[in-house]
Length: 308
Image 1: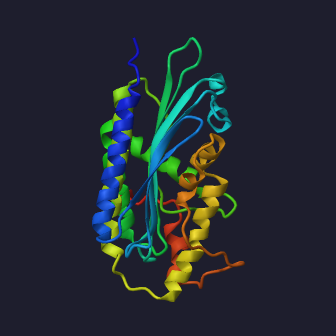
Image 2: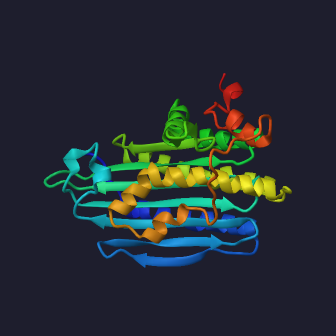
């Protein structure tokens, strides 16, 4: 008999993950703190949004927990699962985006999630998903290597090739087709994960969720006091536009949240507070701004020498 998924254990883990990430980021901020905004969804479920704004280090950050449910799966979740159309469902997860003040500190995103649907006269169907990715404005090789080294270590206990598969999946997913460029330097992404071993699958999601802050916090501390001028700030706001474009055009989580009647404030908390778009802006050849797209945003293997 197949092992039954334990949705309550997943929920308790996610609430603890939200708390631990906020605590670690508040320790970096050493001043401003996350406000807590609990909310209910009329159609079923609710969540807790944790938001920090106008901090010394973090201009805006949101760490959102949600647990929502319904009688019929949204179209975005049944596009490649037509057999689940009409099935009652639950979805829960932690999703976060952190937008720092300093242009030398990258934006980061992370998400871990769990879906379960119960078709009529059938066993529950579950899957896990998640990952994290890094979006620098001014790149540093050591930051990219640390980020990917941490991601690889999280995946290693779950099988050879998992990191590479999730890394490649991340590069493919976080790609702006209309710009023909990656959103950032990648990380991990996986979805529809179900091997039939619930504890193993849950363990993978936990490993990814737990490793995010270990990947991000050292980078923030290393760069948050880096001096910058109006030039770097202007470039940061311009590049944030790419972030907005991806989230509103391609992001499956955003689409699912809006289609399932989720709370708009929480769904769109990933958007930066300030952003700009310039017409046909081209970076000066050889500049650090040009190096971002010419060297860092190329989908490269940051652990190439270690993987040989």
